[in-house]
Length: 561
Image (cartoon, rainbow, N blue to C red; front, side, top):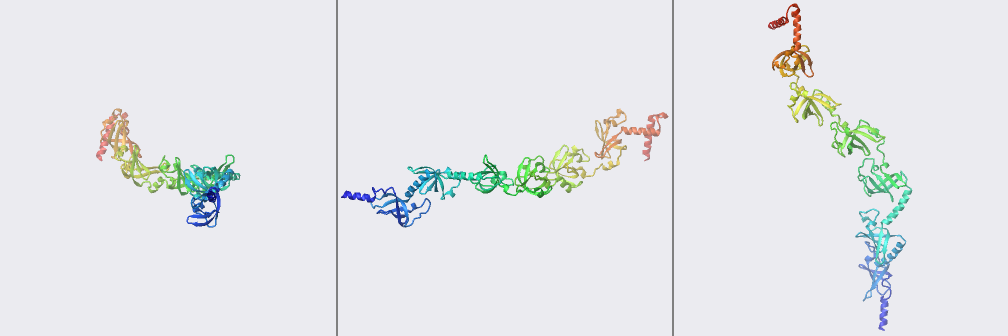
């Protein structure tokens, strides 16, 4: 009798009933704190934690009267309570559904709810699957936050029920969708079409734009009419853009895109907008060895050739004259609208410094400046920021030779000078220091004439002649051959410095302020005059008598005076 009762009890409690490990349907009776009490048709009621009634990360939604499927784990030993699990019931149900989808190669819906080493966890309606990081998207995703908690399709790559392993891929779904979209897009793609896209990747030469299943290249030169050195100046990854199909190669499936083609061309009518000779302000966008590019407006640039950058800085790299992004004033030199070229001048907008100089300092005016350089032929005096005027060594002193006069000056001295000449075309300014004072020999130069006999003072003895002064201000020179009529008397050494001599002027160089003289010519002329006045040797008088008479006559005249 006792054995029959034990068997009956085991049957009622489920030891051999077959309930344990199976899924049963129950009704929620009530909610006690954090558990739901469920009637599954047995003598005992089951208790299920509320957290098992909601997917991972969600709030449980269960109310009294709800009918739910539960997994029977076991009966309690003493009080006969049933251990139930909603989570395991969902898992059993999900596994059955997932196995069918896996066998049919169908997509399944799931929610990414957690992060694990190497990837993420996905809730597939009760079954937990592993999503490798490489299978999240077609391209690497830096922030998976927006994908978390969102219901989305997945492809099952592998599943093992015995081990409870499921591996899924979101990337496979995207690639399949992308392939379908690509085929549809490519089939109807034509040049000139305007499409919406998203910047997918940025390189040095352009950006790749996702058109919805197919990528196109947006070259850096087709992003905007203005100069763009790097695509990142105008684009960012993930940025939505509107583009036009410029070229499409059916064979290679390559798509070339453009953004600037959807904007108005700023070069239309540029010749009227920027007339030659007008001045404008622009921004330096690029500097090369041969010049600098200046942006007059977005999309319109002109070239300032290195030869048009500075009046004074020759053979200098453009980068030493202007800097990138610098705002500069330029003049329009030439416009070639068909070739989309504008020639600009930087120096022309600043004014010719030689023209400006002569306007401010007319000929004859006096300037003051620092000696910037001394050369063998003169001094260079600063008359502007980058402009020098030259004082030739011949314009340093009225009295001293140029080489000697230059020894009185040194670099850095501030001196005054008179403006003698300005040659704008040759970019030269001639100055004079000696011209600050009146020429002491000017009066003598105005008075003396060629053929006149003057009294000179010997100032220097040289091998080829003697140097003399007329009225102590005008320099003259008597060559050796002109020192005497007789060859044996043509000796410079017979003269002494300070000695007075009479000589005849043979040439007057007013520019050089110098006389050429002759004693020989004076003697020959005196002889002719004496012979003409006092007779000749043929009349019985000797040459000595004639000259003696001429000398006596001259002395008598001198005595009368």
